[in-house]
Length: 181
Image (cartoon, rainbow, N blue to C red; front, side, top):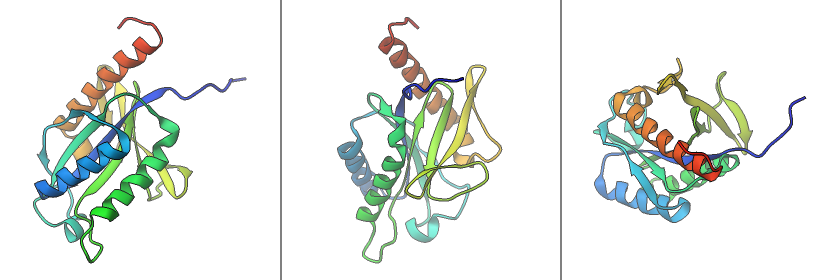
């Protein structure tokens, strides 16, 4: 029989989609206020994989990933998604259209998980209308996508970023349990 144990600490991440530097700055300020200091930042890349967000946010979208300093309790990821949605609502224009899209997630040694409000066959319900989606898994010496992974998460700059976050996670987790990397 398996025994329960506390969930391992994880690194909290955010994917930000925007088309205006002012909205990006406002979103990052609120992310740091609610979740902590940003410790790692990816390169920016054009988001041209879908037109889904253009109706609300507008054209010429940019994607950027961030990781928060320290560790995060993975059991709180549903609340992180709820808070991210509240930040999106706060930053919305007068008509309620989003100016940014903020997707939290977390990195472990083995995977990247991203919460969502939409169900699918490969998503698991967490709580309060939030589902967990495995986005990447670690194989060999790099993260690799699942067949359902969003295209922007499969790009080399995204994989490189999450590999760097994983390296930091491994170092922090090894240190917290007294191991040397």
